[in-house]
Structures are given as structure tokens and as C-alpha cells.
Image (cartoon, rainbow, N blue to C red):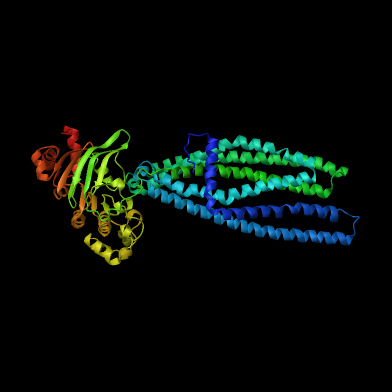
Length: 615
């Protein structure tokens, strides 16, 4: 399948490739498309005889005084019956065609959203680090909607109108070729008008799509952070900035629609001008007797039917241009390759012992700017390691390499002696659990959130995990107990309650490797006590990495690893590090007397490095 690299190819060629890729999406529905096309042709065939029957009625019945009255009345009745029969048949065909096309559009939208969402699940964290959630949402929802509208409306009109133009052109040439050439002679003017306005409409449509994506991103971001907005009393400023964005979108949309209206108006003027010429020349032919009245009426009726689909084709072109922009954005997303890929022959290491080793590991988010430098560290199964260092030292980056959220640029990360890049991703991640400072709970019930890592868990297992996490008591006090809705991101729960549910989720998963990003930060004393108790139960017998911010957490570790500027500068127990009189010891001797037992290590180290620099 061809891929799109914007800017590498001429715009026209790129659009052609994009449209061909869109048509390839219809391949699974080829029988539906085929039946729909047949119904379109049948509908056109049932539309064309109407003016011809009118011609017969006028020339043979209404305007034929020499024929017997009985013959004229019977002929008129037959024409009316035939017209009604055609109307009924045409209505049935149109209904079936539209129903099939709607089903096709809905099915395509369903499958396309499924494909996009499935692909998004495969993309690594690096992709999400550089994309706004609102823009991703815009592609999955609004861009797919644009393609659905094209499938259900645009393509139908395109095919029907194109067939109608060809068929009607043949009919008017058959009735009178001279008048037919005059009428068809106006068509190049249509084409020139369309070609003149099309590039600008495409360009503006692209800008509108980008602006809509930006607006979606802003709405998502600000609603997610509504507490920050309100705490800083930024509501008026947010409204002003939002109005600025939607005003810009308004002007862009108006400019595009004005161009579209101008295009349609010019097209209608050309159609009116052609009608006037036909009235003049065709009327003269009728007066002279070289063209029958019935033929003239049929010709003008066909002419009206001809210019309507031409205007329709121009209108559809606008829909197609908008959809083309959406297609480019969707294919751009589908063509994005994940940085972290499943190995060709993955090793299923299950269950793991829990030994973790970093060998000469270098890692960077931006090329040439390493955040981890030559990391060598071996952690025994069941060992508890506290990672200590100033902000930006690389603590979180280091633990993110264990489940392959990212891959190192140099060196290896080993689990039980096997490079993680050789392991089955799903099997690896099933045996690792994270409990973070800010744990995400999804909309749903308490039970559903606890079962997130193990959907097949029984109610008894859920309750046991909650009890071990010191969460059962508060859960039972909720209005619906375990069936209580937690709200978006768990907004109905306190910080301590969310932490304990996250711990219960990790306990139920029963991981061999555990990563804790100081789960007791910003909690009141009672919540912290309950969380600390739950964490002790969770850590028992598991290889644990703790990104430590508090002295109490550091003292609970078997080993302390001190990172600074992406390197391991010290490691050992609390007593060993104090005895070495290095960065860690200097930090505690100079800072903890003033900061107290629950001092924030990260902030203290930041302060120390600003004052003295790394030792």
C-alpha cells in the first residue's frame, strides 16, 4: 500500500494517491458497492424516459388534432400510467440505493474508527508525547465523519450525476444535434470555473481542519484542567482565547463557503444563459416547423435535468475536497509506525523471576540530548531499589525502559537475563505494575477499575485485593459500594482513595516487578498511613523500583541508587551512602535538619545542586 509523505510529492499526485487509498478501503464492501452502482444505473434508466413520454403525449395526443379523439385519450392515459409506473419503480430503487449507501457509510466509519483506535493502541508513548489528545480525537471522530459523509452522500451524487450527464447529453443530441451542441458548448465554462476555484477551496479546507483540531485540543485540555483554570481565576481569559480561535475558524469557513457559493452562482448563471439561448433558437425552430413542440419540451426538460447534475457535481467536488483533507490526516496517522515493535519471534517468559539488569544503557527523547548515560545496574529478584535524584535526573525514564514504553538508543535492558526487545510485549507488561503519584481511574465503577488489569477476576478476588490495599472499608461506605461510579479520571474520589484503588488494581494483577512513583505524595497523614501499609503488602516478594521523594520511603529500600544528570553517581544502603560522604550524604547533612523528616528529596537535591553543583 502506498504511503503519503506530505511535501515529498506534487499536491495533485498526492491527492490522487490518497483517493486511491480511500477506494481501497471500500474493497471489503465490493458487493455492496456493486449493487449500489447497479441501482444507480437503474435509477438513471428509470429517470430518462420521463421527458420522452412527455414528448409523445404532446406530439401524438395533445397537439395532434388530425388523430381520432379515442386514440388520443387512450394514448394520454397510457403515458400517464407509464409515468406513474416509472415513478413508483424509481422511488423503490432510490430507497433501496440510499439504504444500501447509508449502511455502507456507517460500516466504513465503524471499521475505520476500529482500525484507527487499534492502531493508536499499538503506538508507543513517544507518539503521545508529541501529540495533543484533542487532535487525535479530531481524527478519530470528525475526520472519519467527513469520510462517512462523502461515502453516503458525495460518492452517490458523484456517480449518479456523472451517469445522468452522459445519458442526458446523448438524449438531447438525439432529439436535435444542433441544439444539443449549443447546450453542451457551455460545459467547458463549467469546467474552467471549477478549476479556477478548486485549489483555493482545498487550501482553506486544510486550514479549517487544522483549526478545528486545535480547538478540539484546547477544549479537551482546558476541561481536563478545569480546576487549574478556576484556581487561577482564568475563566474570562479562557473565554477570550476560545472566542479568538472560533472567530478565526468562522472567518476561514465563511471564506471557503463564499468561494463555494460564488462557484455555484456562476454555474447557475451559465445554466440560465444556456436556457435563454435554447429558448431563442429552439423557439424559432418550433415556429418554423423544423422542431416539434413535444421535442422542444422534451429537450428543455432534459436540459434542466442536465445542468442540475452538473451543479451537483460541482457541489460534490467541495465535499470531496473537504474529505480529501480528512483522508490525508487519517492516512498520516495510520502510516505512523510505532517506535516499540513486537519482535518477529517473541519469547513468552512467563512467569518471570524478576531480575532486572541495565547494561550500558543510553536513552534520549530528542536526538543528541541523552537523558540516561551509560547506566549499569543489576537488581535481584524481590529487591527493593529506591531511585533518588534531582528533577530531570532520569529516574522515570529509567523505569519506563523496563516494560518497553521506550527502547534505549544504546545498551540493553534484561529481564531474567533476556533482552526485553526479544520478549512478547503483552506477556512482559502483564507482569509489571505501576502505582504513580497521579493514578488514572477510568469512567466506570470501582469494581471495573480494580479489575482493569485482570478482567476475569472474581468478586472475591476483587474484595481481597481491596482489603489488602486498605480500600475495602471506604468502598463499602460509598453509595453503591463496589458498583459506585468513580467519575471521569476518578474525580468523585479523594487522592488517598484513588491511590488505594490503584494499589488494589496492582495487587489483583499480581506482578513480579513493581514500579512506585512515590504513591504517598500530597496525602493527609491518615491516608498516607493507610497507603504505606498497603504498599508494604504489595511490595512483599516483588522486585520493586521506587522513585523516592521522601526519607521514609528511602529508608525502606534495600538499596538506594542516586542519579544525577542521567548517570548513576552513587548506590548502596542508607548507612553506606552516608559513610561515603558523597552527594547523598551531603544532601541529608545540609538539608534535612531544616526540611524535616518528611522533606521532599527531589526538591532538596535541586536546591543542593543549584547551590553547590554535582559532586
